[in-house]
Amino acid sequence: MKTPYDSYRNLYPEQFSDSKSITKVDLSKDMFDYYLESLTSRSQENLKTSVGRLQKKKFVRFLLSKQAQLVGE
Image (cartoon, rainbow, N blue to C red; front, top):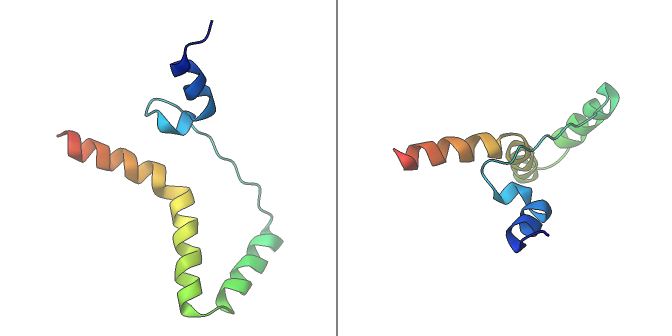
């Protein structure tokens, strides 16, 4: 029988520090080129927002783990 803890862990694994999250994005070169082209045609503020979202998706796990290490010291 599953405990509430196990059920929550299965629903939200990103909330647990020992969970491994693997994100693989298949992005073709053509699609990436199109995305970059559309970024350059946007205003500077929209570009900052888009790049920020892209950075968060790629690096937030790394940054959070480093921050946790610094706080724990």
